[in-house]
Amino acid sequence: MFVITADQVDSRAGTDRVESALGIVSGVLGSAAVRSPERTAGDEFQVLVTDPGQALDVVRALVRHGGWSIGVGVGPVETPLPSTTRAATGPAFFAARAAVERAKSVPERFALEVAPGADSTTAEVEPLVAQYVRALARRSPEGWELADLLAAGHSRTEAAARLDITPQAVAKRYASAELRSDAPVRAALGTLLRSADQTSDNSADQNPEKGADRTTENRAGRTPEHEETAP
Image (cartoon, rainbow, N blue to C red; front, top):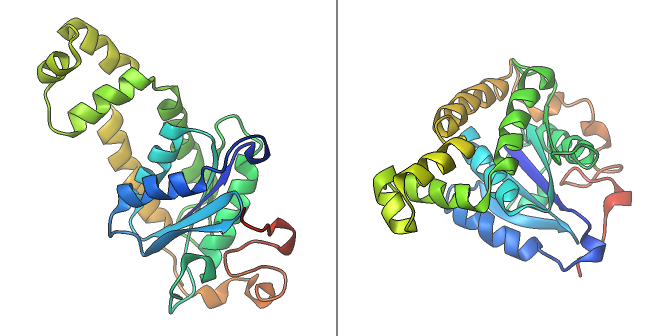
C-alpha cells in the first residue's frame, strides 16, 4: 500500500491549511481512498491508498498547491485495517514517517521510502519520482490551466480558444509545462511503484519495529515527541 504523510511548511507562521488540503485530496480520490484522509497532528495529515496512480495524484495535487513537506511510504500495513487512517500502522506508515522527516530538509520538500523486503529499494525508486515532483513544482499557473483543459479532453486548438490565446502561445505553454511527457511519465512511475509494493512476505508482522510500535510510536507511525494538539 501507499501512505502519504504531508506536513505543512511554516505552519506556525501562517494559517492552518490542513482542512483545505484534506478537501483537495478527498476531491482527487473520491471513493478510492482505503480510509478517509485524516489529520494526525496539528499541522499534518495522512492518506492511505492501494493504487500507485492514486498516490501520484495526491502528490501531484499537493505539489501544485504548494506549502507541504510530502513523504510517501511504500509497503504493507497491518490488517485488518482499523476504521480510521490515524489508527492504522505497519511498515508503510513507518516508511512515510521517515520520508516526511527527510522531505523537510530537501529543496523539493519530497521524499519516498520503500519498506524493507520489497522487490525494489528506495534508491531505485525515489530519484525518479522526485524528478517528476521537481518538474511539477516548476509548472506555472498557466501551465496547470492548460493541463486541466487537456485532461478534460479538449484539444490544444480548443484550449487556445477557451484561454483566448493563440495556438502558438498554447504550444509554448505546452512545452514549458512539459505536458508531452506528463501522462507517459506518470504511467511509468505507476508501474515502478507497483513493483516496489511487491514483497516476498506482505505480512506486517515481519516489521522489525513492530515490537515497539505500541510504546515508542503511535498507530500512525509518529513518535511521542511529534504529537501536537490540533488547533
